[in-house]
Length: 85
Image 1 (tube, rainbow, N blue to C red):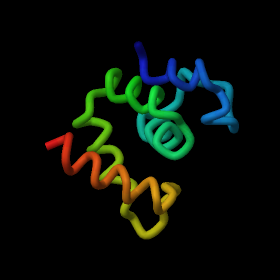
Image 2 (cartoon, rainbow, N blue to C red; image 1 turned 90 degrees about the horizontal axis):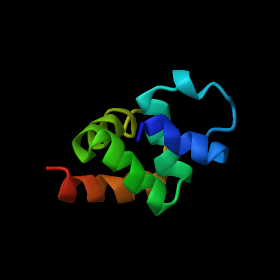
Image 3 (cartoon, one colour; image 1 turned 90 degrees about the vertical axis):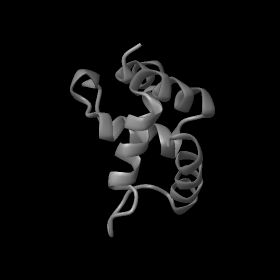
Image 4 (cartoon, rainbow, N blue to C red; image 1 turned 60 degrees about the vertical axis):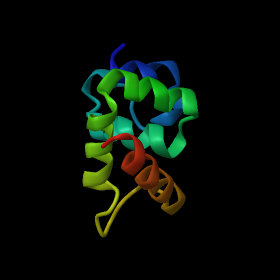
């Protein structure tokens, strides 16, 4: 399963485009972690691998300007610290 299929199956996660073929991994990771359910997160990890998802998250979540919700940043920081080593 391609990571973009998660958005195709749940287009409400990224509502600003219908051009799913050109979505970056970064935008899909952000949308799924912020707005998706646990099944979406599991599908994303299965598609990209936990290490890749953690790397993308850690690159973008802790910048001065970020789109990740504070609760999401905290939860997934702890989650990836434990499971993506």
